[in-house]
Image (cartoon, one colour):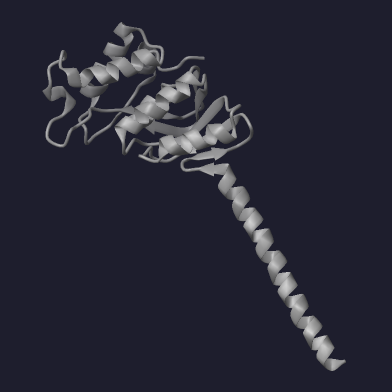
Length: 203
């Protein structure tokens, strides 16, 4: 009888450990399903975004909208920039094509490529005490302002702003404002007047 009690105790211990492991796996799976890189699912229609855009962001976005096709709004906490400009413009275009709204949360910020992403929202709103930053780009040797206005290097950015709803004139005006506002290694935080002038918000 003593041996049976010991055996039962051992079996019971293994059962408890097994169920505990399964429970943890379920929790880990739940967390994984709610996070797609810098995107976190809030509910079926709302996502929070926090972090730099990189080469994996497009893949994460596509996986997310496949799993949650009814997403209509992205709440931005902090997106200070992009580590991959090409990917940034691709995912931003998809945000606009899917008619998704963007909103910067209270105390939030966007800058550089993060600002370009925010502009992709078909409606664009902000909370209190937010910052919107812009600056020039650099290819490692030259800055955007080193090239004449008619240079082809500028056109892809202007085309992007047009693709997300800016008029040709507004797209060009805003783009050249950004590259002259601050050098590539600096940042210019837009004033309320500039935000209004360049039609950054779209309620």
